Length: 262
Image 1: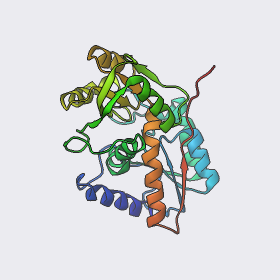
Image 2: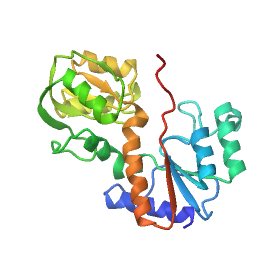
Image 3: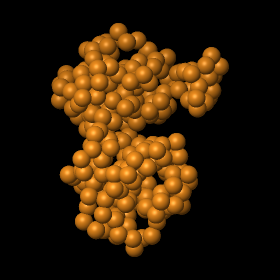
Image 4: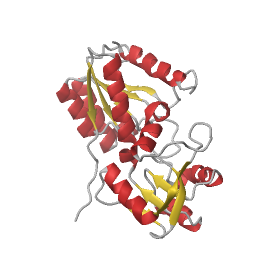
């Protein structure tokens, strides 16, 4: 299978969900050869140096990442000439060049195919209130924030979570600002969830702006982590690729980038 064949496969899967007829503008081959023969594919949340080195070790010359490959300033119109010399970019490019890797990004497309639904399913949420796409919320039996925190920690395998709100407050309808939808740049999405009836949030990644938005709205928010909320669906998609291409080597890299120091 060529990398271009894989791109068509991803696009076909997206179309099957009603997500449009083309990959998003920020998706596709970001480095390497679209016509290369894929000997193996490694799926990762972000194409970090560790993930790229794992791909090389595993014999996977196609790396499929969910998040950006290059670091560049917010608002930058693509990679500028000087930015490959930024240390993280330089180190990633060095591994790719040495190992002959091709890097393919599938961002919103994978959110649509597996990531959002897999996050909801892991949390045990079903039967959302009617809504198009990601504009939906999940009614639950009245549950205290304290019990929600315990459930999130257990189901997500987390030692601790960051949150805002009253632990004794009762929640009856959850919104899921997964991935980075709990960040300050995406508070418009959280507002939409409030309009749909959410009185609690279980988020991927948030920041103090996002936490303050939720706090001042009187709505508790529990943070799981950007990668943690998305790796579930990423691994599911990798399993689906392995099923559809049984002769292709498929690997995943979902090791956390950071740990909490005691």
